[in-house]
Length: 159
Image 1 (cartoon, rainbow, N blue to C red):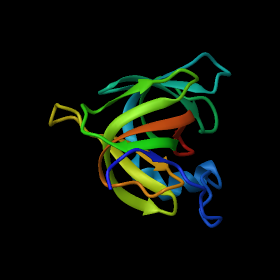
Image 2 (cartoon, one colour):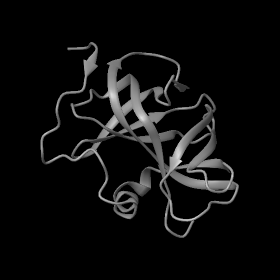
Image 3 (cartoon, rainbow, N blue to C red):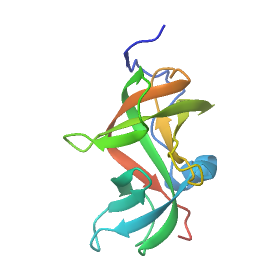
Image 4 (tube, rainbow, N blue to C red):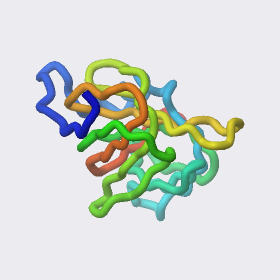
């Protein structure tokens, strides 16, 4: 059935939060996206990442400061709502710091984690990838997904 989906309680065996930044990167690092990073002023936990779909702000889960430039970041968010919908790929920041993403939900990765990809119009550009945590099964295919804040960005220890 295609329609609006609101998250249901998660089975106790499916924690929606990662055990640690390092273990999350180890599990899902292959789904990281290469983006241009503009860290906020020293001491701020926010990163600004320039993507093919525009800039977005994410909570930096890495250890230590990050220099400006290109970086491989793993983006992760918790699903608030999901709805099958054909739409131009992209994202919008919502009031309160959440995001709305329009893309394709594909692979179920493990437990409550799913992969969403935003495919740019430029065939030479790489897809923007996002690991979603959902309390409910997500349908494969085009989806409009709203995320609870904060959107998080993970990176390897040495970067």
